[in-house]
Length: 257
View 1 (cartoon, one colour):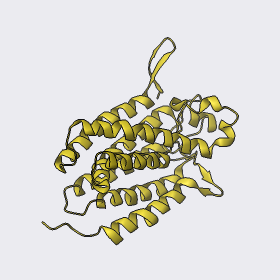
View 2 (cartoon, one colour):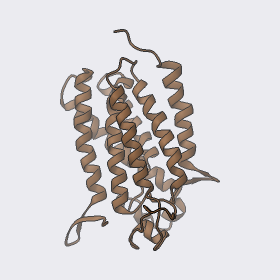
View 3 (cartoon, helix red, strand yellow):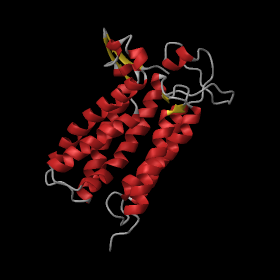
View 4 (spheres, one colour):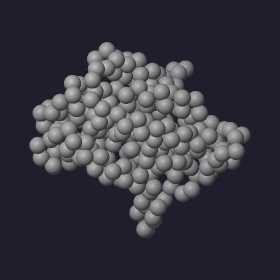
């Protein structure tokens, strides 16, 4: 386990960043295929515009969300804020930025928002799977100490190793990666069913909310909201406040054949 793929002088290429690059490439082809199937865009380059808007916003908001919960530390070391390779991208912040990007694209390209969102969520989950593998190689998003035989002792220089030196930890990031693989399988199976636009997005928010809520019990670096784990609070909000409302109240209805 080593976070650096290649080092050339002062230049480093890290597995963490590589996973995101791979996820962007795979995501592009998934979204392009779904957009074609749904006849969503008028021009092929519209998918590239989508990525050029959504990805930067998602990354910025993912970082700002994480920094906001760790502000006492970042206030002492503000130069660390742009250092994404040290870890610290929160998926819930990324979702906020991504949704904002989808709103911009839907208005710019004059396409239905929910149909666009349904094209994107399978690619989003693929990115989450690869991102958690990147977390594993980087040694962040780690779990609590465990005596189970698959507990992992992370290198001392990694975030996990610095917080729990020499202790076997739950590979919480791999638990979540596996959970997201299952979420992707469900979305991929449902995507051609004749539900109204937005139903697939609702399924994503419900399924991922459940996965993340469970995984948080094993996380050793959870962001806290007072006495509560922030990710669990947000996950409940996603399942109850968004996923269930959109999925059941508005969209649990098949389109006519």
